Length: 288
Length: 128
Image 1 (spheres, rainbow over the protein chains, first blue to last red):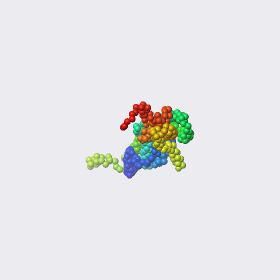
Image 2: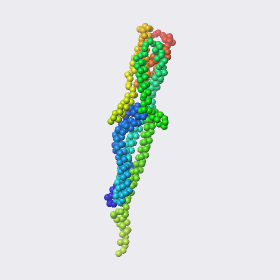
Image 3: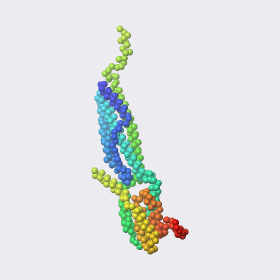
C-alpha cells in the first residue's frame, strides 16, 4: 500500500463523515396539481387515479421515476461489488472495498434525494387534500354567519316549497281554467329526463361508492383517508431518513476502518516511532 | 396521448355536470311581483279589472317563484337582494304562500305588510 492510496482512503473517510448530515440540497422539481375546486367534483373512485396520473405527468413525478431507476442500478452495482470483494485478495480487495464505500455513499445520496422528492410530493398532496376537505365542508371553512344564515333560510324555503308543491298545484289548477304553463310542462319533461340520467349515473361503475372494511365511504371520508395515508407516508419517510443517517455513519466508520488498515505499521514502508526516539538510542551514548 | 385526451374529456364532462349559471331569476320575480302589488293598489282599476290583472300576474308569478326556488345559482349568494328575498317566504313567494294557506293573494300580502281589518278600522284620516 502506498502513501498516496492511504491518503485517498483518509479523504474518503472524511467525506463519509460529512454524509451523516443532509445529503441532497438541489432544486426540487415542481408539481402543480389540478385545482382542489375541480378535483372535489370528481367521484371518489376516480379521485385517486386522477391525482396519481396528474403527478406522473409532472416534473416532480418524472424526477422521482428517474431517481427510482438510478437507485435500482446502484443497488445492482453494490451487489456486484460485494460479490467481487468476497472473491478478491490483497491490494485488489482494498481497492474494491474503497470503491464499495464510494458506491454506498452514492446510494445514500440517491436515497436522500428520492426521499426529498417524496417528501415534496406528500407535502403538496397533503395541502391539496386539506384544501379539498375545507371545500367539502363550506359551513366550517370561513363562511360568514350571514351567509350560513342565508343558506339555512334558502334550504328552509326549498323544503317548504317541496312539501307544499302538490297542494299548491291542486288549488291552482282547480281555481283556474288556464292550462299548465309552458314552463311547468317543459320542467316536468326535463325532470323525467334528469331522473333517468341520475339513475344511470348512480349505477355507473365509475360512480360506485368506495368500500372500506365492508362499509361505504363518503367522498369526505375517502379524502380524509387519503390525507391520513399521506401523513403516514410522511412519517415513514422521516423514519427512512433516520435509516439513511445511520447508513451514512456506517459508511464513514467503514472508511475510517479501511484507512486505519492501510496505515497498519506492519505494512507501512517507513520506520516505527520507537526506533527513532532518543531513548532508544541512549545505549549508543553510554558505552565506548 | 390518447389517454391524456380521454382523461381531459372526462374531467371536462364532470366539471360541466356542476351546472350552468342561470339568468337572474330573482330580478324577474321582483319585477312581476311589483306589477302585482301595483295592480292590487291601483285606485284607478275597477274590481273586475283588478281581479283579471291579479289572475294574469298570478299565472306568471307561479312559474317565476318556482324558478327562484329551484335556482341553484342563488344558493349562498350573499347579496342584499337575495338576503331580503329569502328573509320572508310569505312575502317573496306570494302565490305559493297564499295557495298554501288558502287565502287570497291580497289578504296574504296585506297580512305580511301588517295591514289588517282592525288596523284599517282604527285608522283616522288626517294631515301628516
